[in-house]
Amino acid sequence: MAKTFITSFLGLFVFIANFVSCLANDAALPTIFILRDSTADVGTNSFIPDSQARADFPQSGVDFPHGRPTGRFSNGFNIAGYLTKLLGLRRSPPPYIFLINQTSGHHKLSHAGVNFASRGSDLLDTTGSKLVRPVCEHQKIFPLIWT
Image (cartoon, rainbow, N blue to C red; front, side, top):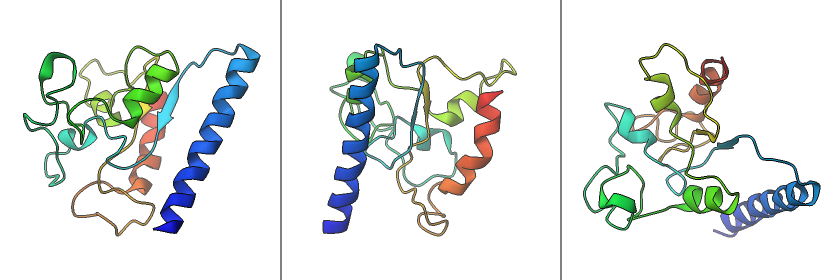
C-alpha cells in the first residue's frame, strides 16, 4: 500500500513539475499520452470484444455530459478527464483502439493525444492477461498511431 502511494505521489509530482514548466515557458501542449489503469481508462476495454473488464453499463456515465455510458470506471469524469480540462483541452484523448478501428485507413494522432489506459493492465505481461491487453502490446501499437 505504501509503495503504491509513493509511486502515485511521485508520478503526480513529475506531472505537476512538467505542467508548471510548460506554463512558465508559455509552451503549447500539442498532445498527451495517458498510460494507467482503470482510474484513467476512457473506454479502452469497451473496444476489446472479449474483455471481461468493461464499464459500458448505464450507471457508468450518469454524471457525464449527455448521461450515457462512456466506458469509464466512474459515473462521470475520471482522472484523465480532469487532467485534460486542467491542461485546457476540450476533452480526453480517445482510446487507442478507437483510433486503430477507424475505417478511414488513417491512424492519425488526434490533436488531443491518445489514451492507452486500460483497467486490469499492468507492467507485468501476466497481470490481467486474460482480461485486457498487457502494456507490452501497447508498444506495438505506437507506430500505428504515429503514422
